[in-house]
Length: 219
Image (tube, rainbow, N blue to C red; front, side):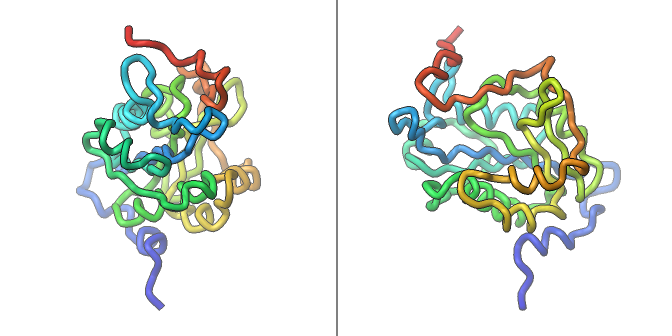
């Protein structure tokens, strides 16, 4: 039986990059949601400080040291492709986006399995209070292809999270509905390296009309 993309990535040796270079830590932006509680406005297309949320979040991953950056699109994906400026990003269409975040996580991990990434930092498009410094701290927690790390806010686990590539098979298998990797992480609390980011980021979500107060006009 042929190896799955995850298994091919898992078997790739850690030394597949030139000597002296940092193993690749990719970025994965989950930006497929339809904004059901926002009246059907896709979160990726909301504006904050003069940029679309999808543009801002992809830029945060790049600036935080992630390479490559893959962006999973779903609701209004054609409009996002038309309006958003996402240089250097790989755009991944998730046709099953309405099934929940789990389907987007699986789509993103499948796409990244074809790269030489040894880990991935996952960020959600609707958390504009998280910037490049928080991403960089989580990237720095990478130790091996078995790494498991998470930003923390006053000691409480949040986003972004880092998954070593040896964990991708199990994470994808567990990702169902809107749970994403929550169940996987909850079962492995003792394995997670917590990286305090409360001093440099705010982990609020843009989920409801009330949350739109966090979005700011251009400076």
